[in-house]
Image (cartoon, rainbow, N blue to C red; front, side, top):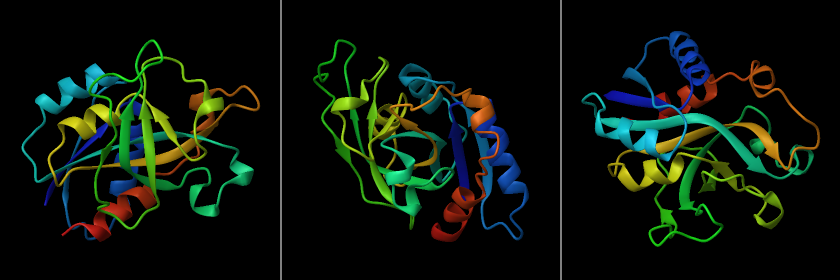
Length: 186
């Protein structure tokens, strides 16, 4: 199977390549494409993807809640699958086409809901375990039925202390995310 993996950032691409390089006897061929961050960048990337059998959006996940209160499967560096995505508008209202999109899971990973917004999201009114990002809704809206989203938990909102994001995520390994793709797709 030819799998396109879209990553919003270069650091995610590096982590994907590192993980793929450690898989022995790969079942699939992978093409990694950096989309850059945001809804528009994701849409443009989706329109110019190489030919493939499946596309996976794979990147970091910011999740609402305290890590100390999360179940172990939602701890730092763990992969999740996004099965519901919605879009939150610039002025704080739902866009007309922002109703949640729901899909069936493709992998054997915890499934969470995602909120896409280009505006800073105040986390006080969001449900615990909501993933906050800027790409999932666009991907979900444009994807093919076989495509899906995998996120790797990188940080928790609201921040209890200030972090240097790129320093903070250095130790995260995407191997378990790539293994989930390898072991669950045929």
